[in-house]
Amino acid sequence: MSALTVENLTVSYGDIHAVKGISFEVRKGEIFTIIGANGAGKSSALRAISGLLRFGGSVRLDGKELRGIPADKIVALGLSQVPEGRGIFGNLTVKENLHLGAWIRKDRKAVAEDLDRILSTLPRLKERLLQPAGTLSGGEQQMLAVARALLSRATTLLLDEPSMGLAPKLVTEIYNVVREVNKSGVTILLVEQNANIALRLAHRAAVLETGLITLAGNSADLLQNPRVQAAYLGA
Amino acid sequence: MFFYLAQQTINALQLGSIYALIALGYSMVYGVLVMINFAHGDLFMLGAFACLLLAVLLPVHLPFVVILLLVMLVIGLLGALIERVAYRPLRDAPRVSAIITALGCGLVIENTTLSLSPYPQFLPTLFVSKTLTFAGLTITTLQILIIGVALGLMVGLDLLIRKTGFGMAMRAISFDAKTVPLMGIPVNRMISLTFFVGAGLGGAAGMLYGLAYPQISATMGVLIGWKAFIAAVIGGIGSIRGAVLGGFILGGVEVMAVAYLPSTYRDLISYSLLLAILIFKPYGLLGHPPNQKV
Image (cartoon, rainbow over all chains, first blue to last red; front, top):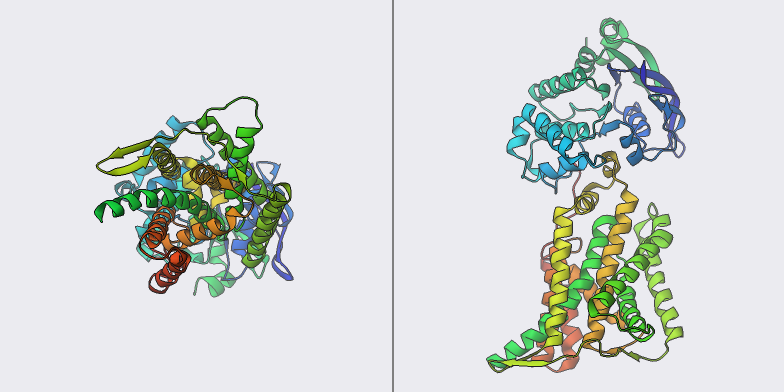
């Protein structure tokens, strides 16, 4: 079963073609990662899928074509994105940030229950609920961004470089959270420069180079691939 | 001496509350779109005219509160309409294009009104004012009404911004508009609502101003609009509480300038105040530098 089907996706900024026709499929319940260097087009692809950028080609979520649907409507279809740089609203409290994540839901009681459940696994956020989110550390902000995205009851979660700017210990923590989220049934599309940790977490992966997918397969196989090792794993 | 000061303070509160109501509209719009809605002063003027039409043309005498709410509704819708047809198509254009468009919208409103009403009009008495005296100070019930309504609207707005989903969304947009759609929030609708609320407050201010100074004209929004803009900048444009603070400071300074100095110094002093504050606090009293993305 496919959660997300991407066919011949192209993204351009004027004359610059950032994504030059990529196709891949994310299966329901798996973690799929796209690895690649800075400027390979990873974020552009992700932002196109979540409706923030116009694109060519086709993106289907659970069989439904997303092309032409504005970003805020796509969230209601069950796809949520944790943007690059976390996208926390620093002038709002942690609690307000979380509530905005649940914007599309009207079932207040269920939102409150979900909030309790998510916070019980993230005690540091719970302690800082009424603090402005801008005062959180980078790791806490990343946790908040993930928690916020989950509150929309997303079935497919897009993560854009969650390890960026974080100490290795925190990266491990974030990745543990991502693994738990995936185990609870959420399909995950992860974009990373940190190929080592992304490939160890994901089930399947693709390598994006200057807007094109050059390699794809099981993450375990890619980890052993000499080309990947040379280019991305520093082996 | 003290009585004179206390008496002038009452006048300052009245003028300041009107400046503050208008300044809020400038600041709210700046907060979400980082543009100055230069048509806002003319929406203030239309608020006074809408009140006139409702009071004169309708065969029934509407209660004061109903007229106020209708004025706010009509001017609010007009503000949202201007955003939709004139500003939204320029959302991705350079800011200066949107600002010039706003100036143009203001001129269209002003001159349309001028062609329909070339001479000043007089608002009928909507509220029979009584003069109260205590401890040697006089205050009219009209002054109490104006200050009370203005403060009530400000408290209402503060609650709206701090407690409701719309308020949260508005603050989120002012922090990082590009991320807001990822929450499933329809940004355009929130911006329309921001214009609706801001213009509605401006309309209410126009009506209150008309009650205090019943001679209304098509050009009344120009000077008052500029003054309120100054108030918003003094307080820190983009800051809601700053707009209120700036409104009362400017109202106070103007009234005191006229009270103690030749009245022709009034505008000299208010513009000098703006310059002085900008030198020492470039972002205004309660304003923040724009967000630095790390």
